[in-house]
Amino acid sequence: MTHHGGLVRAGVVAAVGFLALDAVLLAWAGWWTRRPALVVWGVLLAALIAVPLRLWRRYRRSMDEVQAARRAMAQEVRHLQMALREPQH
Image (cartoon, rainbow, N blue to C red):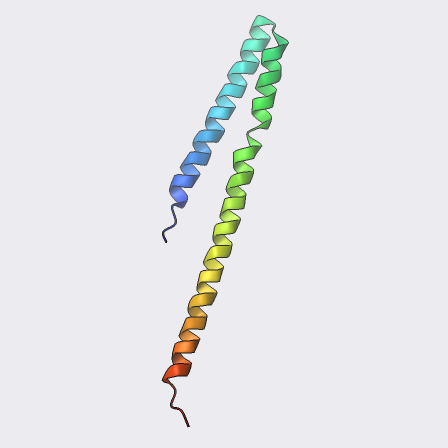
């Protein structure tokens, strides 16, 4: 199993960037045209920037847990292999 952390990070950066750009442009357009609904949508999109960041942190935490479990399992396998190789009395 390979870990594609760079691809995931790039996706998160792209999502956050697009949400930020959309939020700024909507809020600016709402302010410029005096349409408060657009400003509200811009603020809403700005608040949604936290969603991909939280999901990415949860993903990283899960991947760290998987990696720790794999290390523990590999250590247990080495221990069992050494126990099988020891001479039996």
